Image 1 (cartoon, helix red, strand yellow):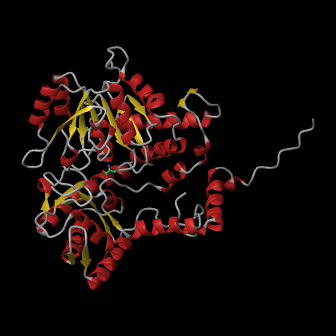
Image 2 (image 1 turned 90 degrees about the horizontal axis):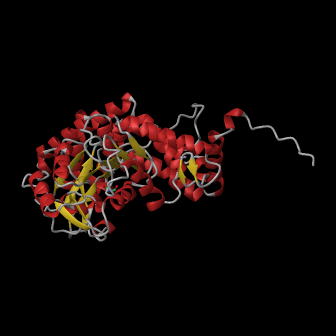
Image 3 (image 1 turned 60 degrees about the vertical axis):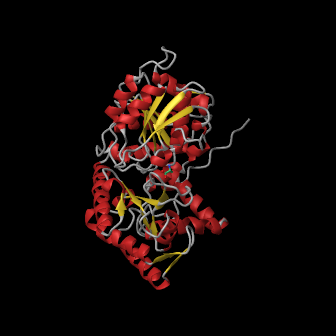
Length: 471
Ligand code: DSN
């Protein structure tokens, strides 16, 4: 049989990911303008909106490119060097890179980069460490905990006996109560972590309590992972047996999760023999997930590299100092700031003294181009869809280069929107139309002065893709 000569490779610049990205975006524009326009609109909206969502950050174009890369086409269950499918040579190297970068970034001795989210990471960890029907102890959802920390709305509150600790009169974690509940209920796992808690977590204290009852300590740092990586919040990695995090909230990574372990990585699991690192490997695959997401793992590798750079550390510092200033400015304007301030990126506002509910504040602010999210506050009697508070975060403001000196303007803008809002019921409201137009313009101008990094690509940039759409 005669084999025809291979056609020449395409020009260097167009071959590989760059060629794919260009071809993909051109194809989208040509064949699916409706979708292409929505993707472009999203880039424009993100650039012209003041996002203060505490659980969000902006991924760099290279993270988005890795996440949309040809690795998406690889199906390979298992781990590097031990896959259940062929064709994983590049993916093996990418996963090894992601694991070693994650360990370096967090000073960990074990990392698993396969969880599709931190929720799935938590489910895997709990399934490995808590027997069916066993007890776990975590922060109450209403006090700022997370669904997967034993909420009745999650399988973690149905398949386990979930006990919850709460906050003291100042809105701070009540470590005495944690210790008392641990002694009374002897949980298999104690969870340290929160979705809406603006203060520093004392991981050493949590570990002492876990040790006093023979529990494993799971630290879920989804909301503060960037601060931990940058040294702006104490690290739990050598205090907790296992640490979990999502990779998008504060790490500028793709949607995904991560499991870490530090000095306890060889500590035996519940069977008294299997070390925790081996237990976690099995817990993720095959016990809780099948195929990993190779392109997302490439994007994690890229995000971990960026998070190790000095620029990330500078942004993390700006995030914390900005949040501190934002809390102070909002307090000055008469808003009730929970716990009186913040130690991290997050500010929680209690709206109960105002005429507005959380959902009304959220929607009115969104109309004027400011994104915050409604949040229940301790003792809230309103439903999670309505709530009596809002949660703000400074991750994205800091990525825009906005720090303490810009927070007066941000706080005054928020205050002006809320003052221009007339509630008609718990969910209905009216924003003064004249004020709305003016405030929206003000927000747009503020965003233009502090554009998102990389939101626009210069036409003369050799890497320009000719569209604002993410890859
Ligand atoms: N856990 C949700 C939050 O805190 O906003 C989404 O990641």
